Image 1 (cartoon, rainbow, N blue to C red):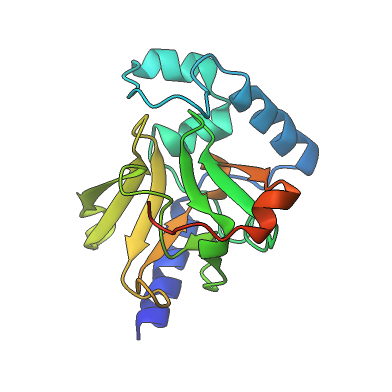
Image 2: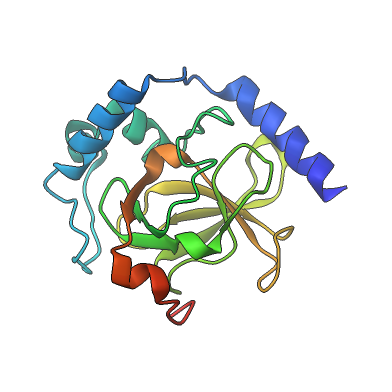
Length: 187
């Protein structure tokens, strides 16, 4: 039943999406632009409080529409949907670390899915009652950009499924030494 509800949600969201699938070169250019914005810093910890006008000036349109206007990309269009690479996923708006690749799983919902964030402070949870549904929105813990939603139909050990828009994700491959280090999840 939960899978059916997730697929139904995908169809509702798909109908409301104004996104068209971008070419790989356009997506790469957009991400390069996002990384070059003045607030993108993977080492920063201070919270960001920019106006919507400031965000609009520094983010590529695709990222702005998801991050600041709570948009949703079309399902099965993210370059991260089927990715099996080892590394870390970051917020494309500010560089905040969000998820480790070892918490990513194939949920079949059409968006990159994770069962646990990188830390308790990397994500903010907010009730979302839009579209006639009761959901929990997840936003970046540093810049409050919309990432997606979390559902209670994920795999063990958490039972959660963080359904995240790939447009708002940036990825860095793990260095060889990091690939063999498992680390402590959820710290």
